[in-house]
Length: 184
Image 1 (cartoon, helix red, strand yellow):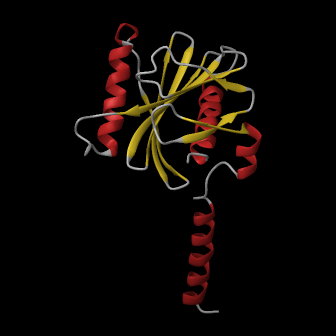
Image 2: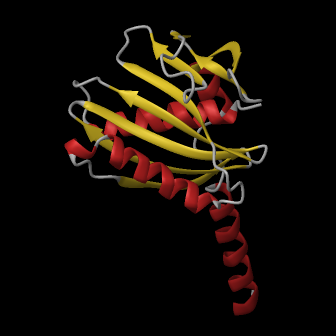
Image 3: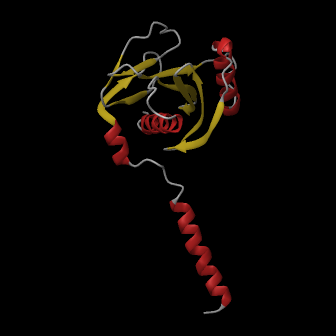
């Protein structure tokens, strides 16, 4: 084999390897283990998701803002789906992410939260951007996503104090990713 053929072969193998790493981090089996078969529809938005196993929906006190609220059976974790509204419907993805961060900084201004970016991703063709922060013993992980030309904030909270922070973040990310994979 010539050097050129060896180089082309190595390039092909490298490309195949890199492309295989670009698939979703969570398989359909992961989704099936995390989520039930019960589908719920948001109160005011044209969006539905599967409920996590052992979770249930509750009516939000602030139903003007929270479109769907899910709580774990031990009440240590919750998920809320909030549609993001604006008079200017032409806001970009990064602008919505910035608005979300600013809103949470204002909401928790006395706690002086430190927001940590957790990256951008594409889940089943849905663009997402995530960040997290901790207030007292509650970890908040927020994922902004766009579905049918509407922006949403999927907020996951975990009050479990027996997990380390990295484990909490990973668990919330896995749950949010699984839910976004089921968005219809």
